[in-house]
Each structure stands twice: as structure tokens, then as C-alpha cells.
Length: 105
Image (cartoon, rainbow, N blue to C red):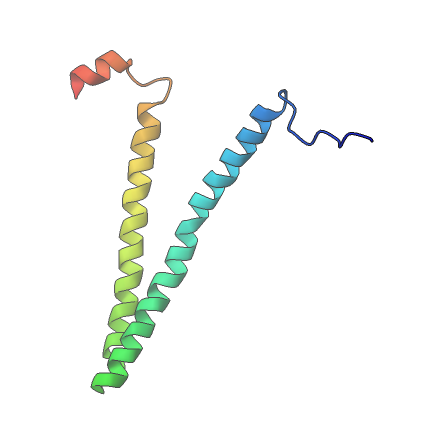
């Protein structure tokens, strides 16, 4: 009886597979901001539409919730960007040595 072929990943390419998986995860994480930017105002506008129909105040809540969604996502993306840049700047080759960073902080 023939033995089934070995379908395990060879050890020489396991680092490449892990690297590609990490790149895919990073790309998915970065693209989540676009979904947040698109869906947060829409979801909040739909909530505002429901409130407007319930309270008979059209278009007060639709517009205000949509604007609130855009502003909220914009602020979140801004602070997330600042945090990522600070982390990258701290790990940069031209940054101070780890011992010097601890003394400064």
C-alpha cells in the first residue's frame, strides 16, 4: 500500500509562511480603518433615521449622528496614527539606546 504524500511545510520555508501570514494580518489591520470610516457614519445615520421617525424630528438626528460618526472615526484614526508613529520612532535605528530612553522617561 503506498504511503500518502507529506503535506507538511518544509522547515526551510516555514519562516516565509510565517512572514506572509504576518503581512496579511498587518494588511487586514490597516484596512480596517477604511471600513470604520465607511460604516460608522452609515450605522449612526441609520440609528438617527430610526430616532427621527420615532420622534418625528426629520432630519435632525440623521445629520447629527452621521457627522458625529465621521468626526469620531477621524479622531480615532488620528490618535491611532500618532501612537503608531511614536512606536516606530522609538524603535528606529537613530533613536536613543534603550538605557537612555528609560532614563529620559
